[in-house]
Image 1 (tube, rainbow, N blue to C red):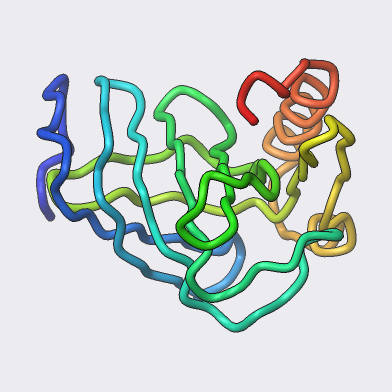
Image 2 (image 1 turned 180 degrees about the vertical axis):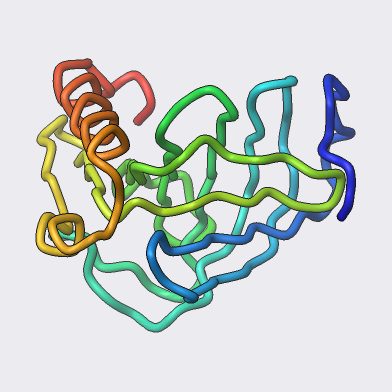
Length: 162
């Protein structure tokens, strides 16, 4: 098994693989992104959405939309700043409730815990995927951490990230 990245801060502008695991499932999604910056506990990655068009809340995600993704080893979430195409017009912030990320030299891995919080440019917040979360087979402590994380994010002014 490859060694985890210890307190090494990576060189920006290199390609990384992002690996998303779905909790309680064998589903894995993988995409590539360009490392923008990093600290021992965080990474920012620029990635291009290449999935099928679809809605997240009221936001249409389209192929070519730019995602600036932020991952953390000490937080139970990650978030994406989603831009229209390659422009600087932000569509939304998308918070994924997840286990803390794991950083490797060549990739970032994270486990999605289904709950999502969408923040629109006007500051309005929308909780997504409650049905999926209710069906998720996770222990009670993890479930409580997820709800506390959502509560903390919902009660924080996140517009500074827009």
